[in-house]
Image (cartoon, rainbow, N blue to C red):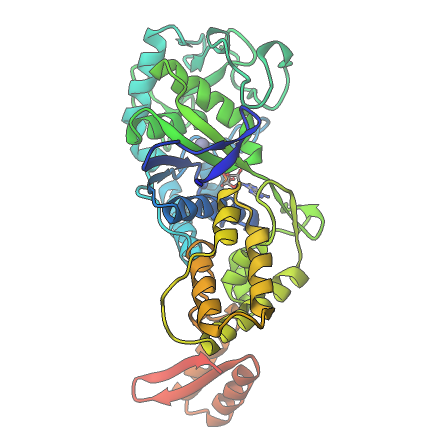
Length: 455
Ligand code: AMP
Ligand code: ZN
């Protein structure tokens, strides 16, 4: 039995790359103008679950995940590049913004035990690939230069448009979100820009055969996936909001260029809500991984609670559910340590089949809960099965006491204590040590300065 997953295009659960040992995978990456929130992280965990499950079945995986550092417009009204908008707000260079949030993205992935992709190509460094692809699309009459010097994909040239989302060309109404207000030069309202003319924009622009400008967002994923994965993607992953127009447009571009079905399976993760509502700045409920660690909670508690839900269902995250996952995680780690010290893993058929059956992680976790209580199974076997499941769940179950990132508020207290000691203010230094102790941080003074650990 091999991994099968729900394909949005065929609306069926299908085996991934039947008969192939080496599997190509693409996951739409972050737009690096802000920290990833826990919703974004749910989608990146989904990609990791797929990669790890494919490895569990014995396949090798070539995963590519792009970094969008140019071309993703904020919305259809302001039409400003998300990265440039943030650069203005923070008053720093847009590439500095992009690199800052890219580094934070990698940091979050590491805290969540997400295995790195083979490559993380940046849009801004793939401009030549995109231009080659756009030129081919123009040559083959799938794209044209508009009266405003933008290059557009001609949706009417691509007969099977709408196969993923069900949004067929004749049902697309003018004035919807897929069209931008500054795209007056196109022939048909649902055409989209592959290349945008610089206009009065001066940053993040490149020369091109169609004049200075910058790429549209959708073309980057086509250019990167087709170039780096040899014109065929076995499994393509992203959040459900990307189904249309992003993936529909990506499919049109890639299929038009390769004259084949470029992606075998389109997998979409459902959205994460926080305390019953869509996460948004205006609602004030955008939760970051750092908000979780600031409460002294292991980031892998987030991974556990996400995996307690099926990727295809909308999920409502709450502080209570994160905290109760943290309690389970600590108990499991303690028990796994109590059950022995061997790193041997033992395959459990029910767990294997649950992973392979469209990533039924809730069932895997249920099985672990049952095993935990089962008095007929020896401790060694329990430990070996927990470690087997952990190859995919990636909860560090073999590490009884995991080092966590230092909570934010403790960082400031440690800094203040350092200054108090430099000023020989021993009373303040001791008071701060007590305060940190209450927050679960043990401070000791060594010849190299103060050091901390979890109490
Ligand atoms: P972005 O950085 O906004 O381009 O999004 C990165 C990934 O996160 C994409 O695959 C999105 O579909 C996904 N995503 C955005 N919001 C959510 C959410 N609330 N829950 C799950 N995934 C999301
Ligand atoms: Zn994409």
